[in-house]
Length: 460
Length: 149
Image (cartoon, rainbow over all chains, first blue to last red; front, side):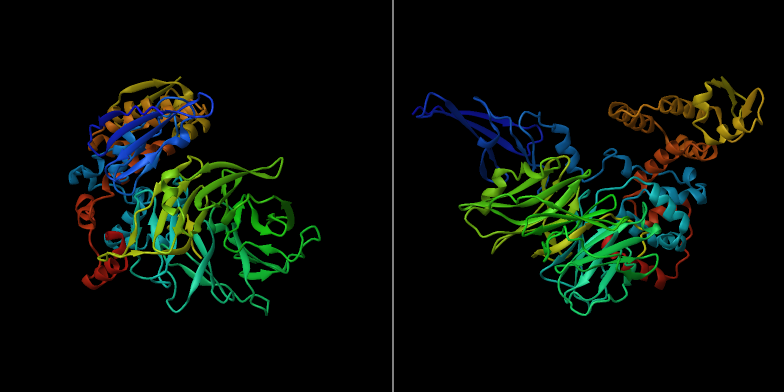
């Protein structure tokens, strides 16, 4: 066996990482196939990264891990040139339109005559946290949340990335919110929900989050940013067994109302209509859906247009409900082997599956896409190998927060809780900074949560 | 071709489609209340020239991905070179002429300029009176303290 170490030392001009490319070429015993292994050494993380996975051919791998600010490790696909400029942009913490625009000194002589009626158009385009800071400018700016015209302005602004509302192990009463654009955790001063409630988020739509108390009795709807809050009227059941929940909007925003559906294992279901503020039973589960309905409660229902998709087992597959027609359908889809902690997700109308794949002692996070013609799951992506190595030999659990376009994965073993976001359309894995209280140092453990669209004017 | 006349009596000849990017001008033309040229007493020639450059670029209704990217790049460059005076005049012109995309773009630019400032700086820049009582102001700050962290 020949060992020819070739060491290349490349100094990136921003001196953020030093990569040592170590290429070993070995001749395999079987045949004369030459396999070269490339290792990248990242001084920041102090680890050798085995880039074996991506290198299909002989010679060097082009898979590069780039480290920007702590917590923004990003994987690139093999063959793609490293976007040097992107790393720097990430480091300027979300100033996407230019590095100096927000530090420019504004000339009061110019801006003192800014027309009153145009303020709303500007304020609606501020980052969410900036809006809340500026509420203390004057009474008018403080009261914009209840202004109809401001609400209309907000609806016109293109939707941003969702935020994540999380429940931590340390404090089940107040939620910590994560902004993936600025990679910042926020800890609201006043909790969004009355503190005596212990509730879990089960669905979200249009900027509102639906909560169910741990006894599965009462539903609550809340806008986590503005604390607009409502307890839904009581359901017409007497047995409080566990239910799966889905939420849809009637129109493009919550101003048109929303519907919430719960379904139980016995096939019973009800729909709440916010415009009528009441529950209704639109019909019965058809015989085509096998009962008992073994629902996957940890997987939040996916909503595409106005259809909800729930995961079931026995048989493995998906059950869908169309809000307009009230029709239930069942799709039998065999589950991938060695799968656990799986949830449904969606991206641009395509149904995805996220889950842990455990084989022998190795665990990996995998993403599948549903092939509509064959009703089979096809693996489309995996968490980078280097990150999965951390879980080797450990018993790992995973919770998926959010199920549309951008997901947050909370991966827990006995002693650690890793947080990662996954952008489904860009196939981008990003590390999430630890959730730490202000003036605190201890990282909070994320138990569960949901994604929500940050919408200032969504009313419960 | 349409002739537009600025407040300082300068005239600009533009294609009808370009002029109709402005809903105000579009309604004037459709309502048949203009003859040879359209007077715009609220817009100076300097500003009108810039507006016309913007409208000429945005009049092409090509929905392809490449064209969208091209427009985005144009918008960034268009905003980059502006001094604050011109930006201010452009917002007012976009509002008066009712050119939604230009108004959105200019308002977004202003939002980006002020987003990292403090509430005190905002009041100073826009000459806004602080009409909170000290207790009220404290309460609002306390309630929204999380956004300051």
